[in-house]
Image (cartoon, rainbow, N blue to C red; front, side, top):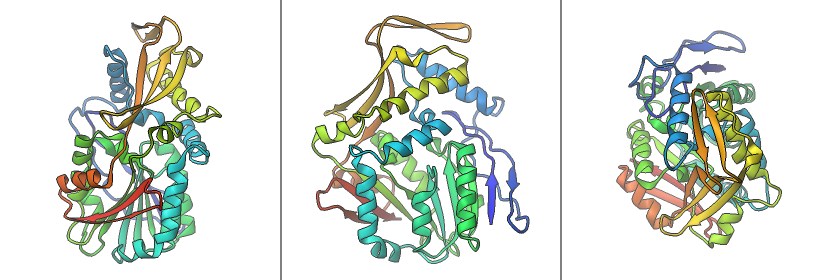
Amino acid sequence: MFTTLEASARSAAGGDTGPAVALSRSRMVDRAPAPQVSPQLPEMSADAMRAAELRAGLLKRSATIDPKFLYDTQGCVLFNAICELDEYYPTRTERAIFEMYRTDIASHVPRAAQWIDLGCGDCAKSRTWLEHVDASRFIGVDIAAEWIEQSVAAVGRRFPDIECLAQGADFTRGFDMHALLGDVEARPPLFFYPGSSIGNFAPDSAVTMLESVRSHLGSQGGLLVCVDLRKDPAIMKRAYADGLGVTAAFNKNVLRVANKVLGSDFRTENFSHQARFDEVRGCIEMRLVANSKQFVRMGGEIRTFEEGEPIVTEHSYKYTPEQFVTVLQRAGFTRHKMWTDPQSWFGVFLASA
């Protein structure tokens, strides 16, 4: 059973979600209320809010683009390619941990769970897990609504006895899924956040996001979250600056997104991809650096970029196990279990309230 909940992918201020639309394989299903994304500016459309957020970031003295804009349909395709690169160790290390400890991890997932995949993409990781856990429902959540409709539909075809919902929403800005989840004691939620995406949040923001997750869990629910651990900076940096240039293409694609959303005239060839490790903050910073002085039109405004001036597009924070346990504790999680690889490059945490 597959339902797509067509929600607005909101920007920083959030907004109302849209109506539920049923795409049933054999029969229509009841409409479920879509998760809300902190409505604060209801008079603005989703597209207007996305444009406002992009424009505001680019017009700052130190220009930024929120990393969620990296993940349009083309960005998702490129990121999947990145995950297969030799330099990009997180995917294969996470996969190895899952394969080694899958039975143990699955034993901690409650029966009749609602499996919620945050940033689900192609849902490949969840499809594997659904073979091993007792799930009554699957909810795929991602900002790339068009991308996930097909992905979640594929999950529904593979698991016809599991109710499958596609939720296009910007969950990074806060969300309310209480009405959608219903009785969490009868069907406990298991939030799945793989791929070290939690690292895209600064630690304080990660705490805020995880507090929102914890508020949905009830007494039996949990969070399965993956974390890239601190290691040799050279190893971490190579994961964001591969020799084939796939990550560079992924990063530059965000300028095409800006052109589409803002009607701007960025030229990707005028910027170079750069990744560096910030020892003080403990994060990789991904940037697009202007190759020469240039003027970019954004509607009625012009933004000047000097030669060497960066646009920061992503931060990826790395943690020691102890540091991430502190983040979980600050978010209100009182119990946790961790699995890691022999080199301690990557951590899989299962936490509950």
